[in-house]
Image (cartoon, rainbow, N blue to C red; front, top):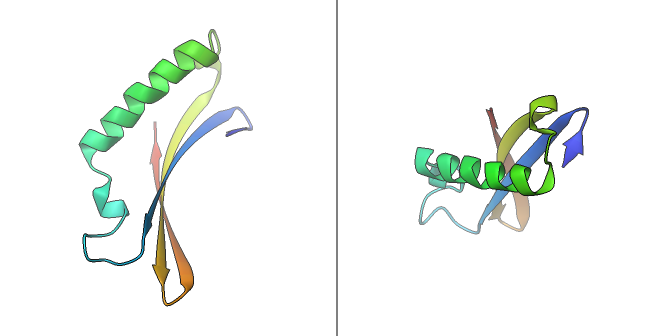
Length: 79
């Protein structure tokens, strides 16, 4: 998503139970680094020449489906 001079990259993790941990717990430094590399490739391919003129923001969202009601939690990782 692009808004106000910033490109937002968002990963959504959905969990129906906490049996294997939360969605946000699955966001490791390895995952963040992998996402950064993917973003760099995307920017080189799609936003040529614009990289220095925009801000980049990564966000991770967890959606927990508990008792029929979705619960949403955000983790913002600024670049």
